[in-house]
Image (cartoon, rainbow, N blue to C red; front, side):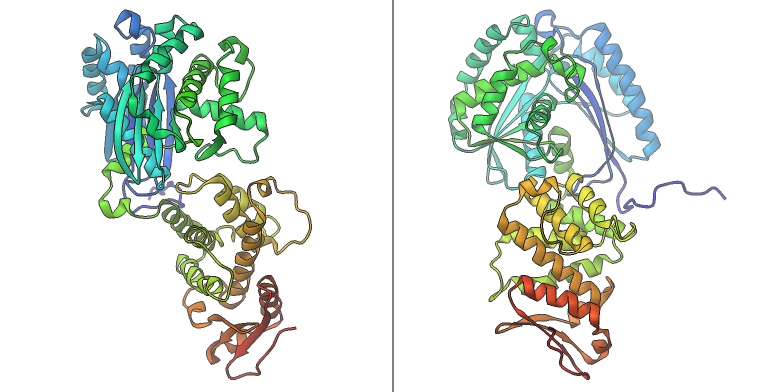
Length: 512
């Protein structure tokens, strides 16, 4: 009998969904594990075919770029078949809708892909990109802009709703074409186009969410220049002043000046100065509160629109954490029990906790056991690295650092003194204190449950004056022992309480 060689750490509740995005610069395939609130790519590839190169001056996509795109689509069609995707969505943007030979190209592309191709209008493209931002940053509230090779789409996101939207001829390749590669000429074009949009003033003192490969390259280079302690691009934030200074630096460089910089791919070096130029002129005109780079864009927005209303309402972070716990923890049921068990610690008279902090604590509980298969000496570091760099949505970088540190301390113990973890730069003293409390709580609960479900719901922890009390009913009283007492004492100490384990059917133990 033929063995199933599929990786075991995959969820099989839904079939893969494939999205092909035929853009003006790149043609990309992303295969998502399924149509769900936490989109996990199982395959992701792009080829910079340059369909929009010279389109503004010639009106046509070149033979070379068309040949490259069609060859790429043949490869993608085969990959889609191999991964077993039952749903294939193919969209085309500015180059295909504007070129004189666009219809001919789309006909050939549809024959290769075996499905109809949606040629997106500028408004549709803007809507999908903005929904991608909402998918990855649910509380987004500001202007979102997607810079592709042929166009720039700008949308006002307000409280999860899309308001004004527009498409402008300010894509990287188009701007190079229109300006004949001259940055001063390009600046005049950018100012003229942005000046036509009166509602851009609504973005003042609100975040500016950037989408697109050129602006991701901008962020990646800024990370490298500032020695930022985390390499995750999604939700990377820059102050307006920092973004403006860095954009001004880059848009005064020629593409050849970027040669040898390993953090920017060679094909992106051509458009990066022009992307920086658009960014600089936009910031000067709009004056947003900060710049936020979104790794979620048109493709994730398309997937988001395929979801039911119920699925869209799910918390993307907790959905992703639950999936990871399902795949890697000993018991996802126990992980949810930990969320409830630790809730009590942050109710009065315990430490105050905001709704956002509660959500991050639940994420840490869900992920607390994902490293159990690793050697004990490495569980902390491996779990920290996995959490810090996972493709989570709905969490900023300080939040990532907090969750990762909770699980690190859960595995390594409550280390005192200096520890060499770059992520510490991203958390403040309050978050560090909370991470130690959460870790100490999880370590105590593990001594009772051994990470098995159906136990800690019946062994509650409560406050009693200056004491922190753990109650063990008679059937669990034998679990009391030296290890549990030590760990519970550490938790009580973090909460500035005296530990008190009350085991029915046995002596009452006040831990010292």
